[in-house]
Length: 609
View 1 (tube, one colour):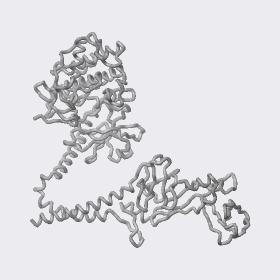
View 2: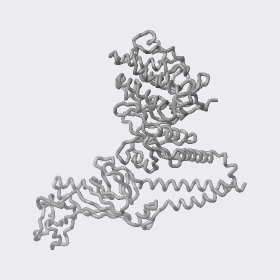
View 3: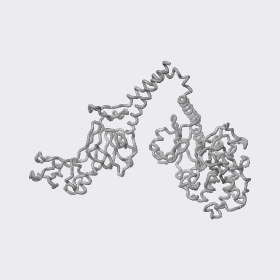
View 4: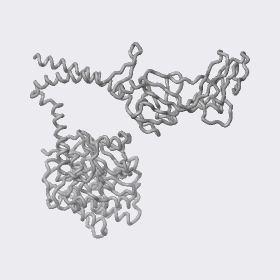
């Protein structure tokens, strides 16, 4: 009982310390590097936080042009250029005083005030642009202009200045001094021609504050106004000491704790990592490059351009060092032992075909995994074929393009089934996994559910069903329909091509199967009776013949009995051959897979009971 009480005490104590450490970490995020438009990536002592600590300079990069605040008395200033270096405590920036610019434009000498640069115990500024000294004297003093000096009348006073840099005249002490930035060159000697609203400013961070920041600390002033560095390590050290004691107690109860979910989760992550690393060792040398996670962050510019997301994770636009643009798919934590990642790398690294997407690299670093593909400018096929999709306007691709896409996908599948040194079964053919390049050439992607089999093996064994509702072959759900083989991909292909023709989902998982109009049956009836297909923009005879071939081939592909489906080689022959040589297949049986909610209809593996 005493051990339990001690454990609870330490647990509550460390929850408090974790909260304190989290607060420090959130504060330190204000110092993190960030993107600032044309200036690229900048960081400390600049920040994009509007209300930062006193040792940071807030810059608004979303404004055009960007502006920066220096102290509270004047500003904001327009930022013209930043010469930034991560390794230096001195940063140079060229800025423009907007108030001074307005005074010079309208030649308002009465509002000219002394230019002062704020300083703090943490940051100091140095004006590296030449300055002009003005002497503001009361006109009642009756001062005559000294040698080499000119004066300008400004209401009740005169401004004396010298363009020859002779700034030591004999003037009464009653005259105040104003210093303002000066142009390097000027066409004449008038006051407003000599002054400049733009100037170069050198920002210098104190060595103490710089060292404090480098050690993950915060520069602050204590109540006596003295410099103090608050370092997260102080919290971390205390936390670590307590955790050490906590672990001693945990060790006493290790066997009882082994069933706790968090420990099982840790074990699961370890098993996944070991599985992935074992696969990578056994398949070395791979023909594709392995990248570090830091490389992934660099090529995606810290993941700032998201292209899309799904159940697998997110896809970001990136650029390799050779200038090639890529799509980087960052995977979520695997639910299994890393099988989907292993499938992807193992299967796609074996391929080289115009209709298979190219995998340019991968990353596996601890729990972080990513896949790097060639970038497909036109995205996935699904955004072009479904009516009602904002990016689709009644088959905007045209029937000829859709026909060529159908042939391209068929050739890609034929290659996977027969053209590789091993047979690759995809198991997730659907419009979402067909990517289109700039010429709308289709490329099969997403091999997370793929299986690699010997070419001579026609029927494979599989523990669970895999795929996406609406495209899964009947035998994948129930062995009573036949064995699982490459014909399962043929079924998915047929369902997908029918959706390309109809511009709609064959099976809508959001409604009851008994109440929906099953499109394959509808199109079969029109084909059998030789009726008009009722499809939009189908005016040319060649297009109508091609669409009829697509429909007949698709209906053959979705036959319930796998032995009645053609191989992908035969599919290519049928699509490229004559329409008159094709026979209308038997009416396809309405196969309704197990009912699922819309969110469950995406790609997944399902265990069969």
